[in-house]
Length: 166
Image (cartoon, rainbow, N blue to C red; front, side, top):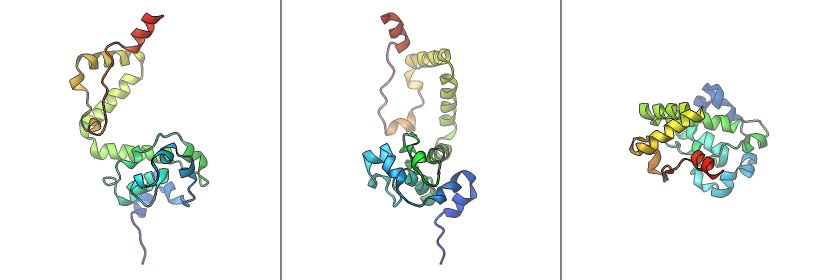
């Protein structure tokens, strides 16, 4: 009897194929700041830590493990510690993109594209945050805000405060 458990799907994509090289040594667990804070049971899988955040969504389905790729600071310590050179941050970013594509829809993609456009130049950022201060109800925070607190925008931009305080 041969058990696949979704590994053929991982093997079919060049970016995810490298996760199959994991020897389960635990080096990524020892250096991961997120794993050190939350422990292994928070991952809800037999694969804990950074490598678990990569393998579990692929084996159990992206819908079931959708939160795991986001349980990382992407600091890269796991990549540096891995003896078989698995680029875990790259895999996490790939899986994050898959989650957003499967759950986000048109408006989420448009919002992230708009955010990326605004973050390129300081002038664009100022325009975007000024617009958000005037029309805060238009911020596309729907599904994202359900599990998080959204503090809102400061009434006075930091750049203005900094300029006035000099």
